[in-house]
Image (cartoon, rainbow, N blue to C red):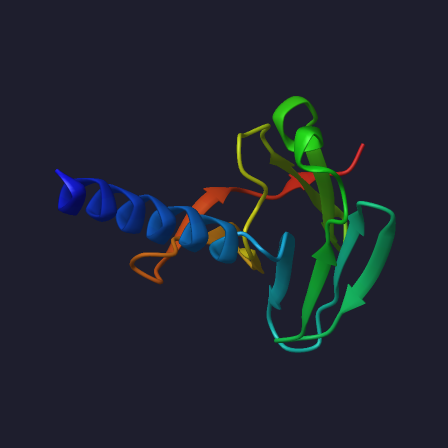
Length: 127
């Protein structure tokens, strides 16, 4: 029985520490993969930036953990006359190094396990 208690404590500590370390840095990263010479503008979460081809920008989220459970994080992406409203839905854990990529045909996200780009939306015309 003592071995079982020690086993449960070790397993619980292992998973608890890994969860805390995994989501230590709350950030959303945006990358410009548009054609060379085209500018991607990213704004939201209190800052904005113009990104040149292949450049990245990190939005550091210094908000309390309870914020993610109830609020929507919005980042606007602009390229020329087109835009995309990137919505990060409320969730129990903060965004852990999310990567969003703007390309000529739309906006993509990177799936962490496979490292593949997945298209999440297309550019719409500004009104």
